[in-house]
Image (tube, rainbow, N blue to C red; front, side, top):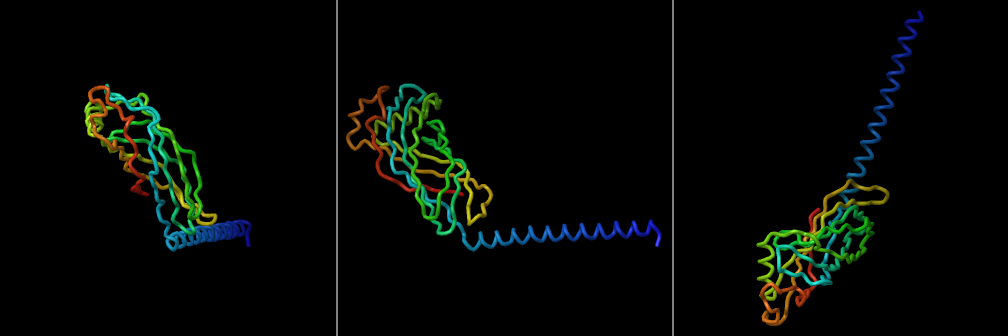
Length: 214
């Protein structure tokens, strides 16, 4: 057998060996992915539950112009309903809206892991400093204040991951919306009306459940 034939046979065997290794590696990756998918489907992770426990105005919102200047503290609770699935909160931005218009600057909560059946509580302070709003929004809120009833929405926008054992899923978008009703509990004449109307006399009505989309 000539040197050239030996060289060709060696190259052929090397290619077959590399092909077998690549096939084995691909099969291993597919098996791992299949096992992860089976585990994921078997456990069926449920989305977390969110509750708005409180909303306190730390500085009154003055409605004398088309901009708001306020400070509010919200208390949010989240519960992981899963027995075998943990939740990674990668990013959570909290803000308040009125009639679908943002009235506070988004505040980012620190990343956090939530174990099985665990409950996590956050109490961020939200500021409306330098948040421009349309004139009709300020006018509408002023009318609601005069009526002694203001309906806000506390919203959370973020990313979450599921954790099963040592396996961690990809990132999923999380969106939470919590109704926050502020009520006077007494006649609207106590507000004085006009451009001096404020939300300082309105109080958070009661804890509420939130809608959650993942």
